[in-house]
Image (cartoon, rainbow, N blue to C red):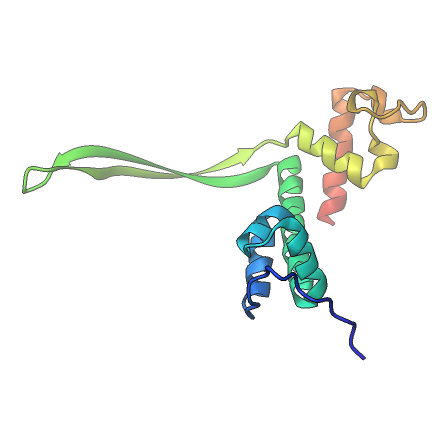
Length: 172
């Protein structure tokens, strides 16, 4: 027995099979409910009704958002721990063509690997969310000071040691 479906709003455009896929891709790109509604020519309330009436649409939006959240989480962790990236620089020089017009000619192309250091704010956010008992929010973050929170009075060296230990654990 299937779940009862709601009637679509009267002003809704005709449903097309590819709308669910479009919604999934848009949600993955960070579209809000309002943006999604606009994409389909609906007001936000109409889009909400549309999602309730079309389970495949609701599932597609949830999948898209889940993928985006997972990607954002991976990027936050990479920024927190530091990452290596490749940077390409191109040096050009103006050259006159046979017809007398100026164009740019590539003189040098360099590909350099750069190591970006760990970002303290990303580390703080990651650790406070993943291990709140150990790295919970302190007064500076709007949380109440925890008298049992040993991390509140740690030196830079002690924080670095904890970070190295967490990196070791994550690497296992």
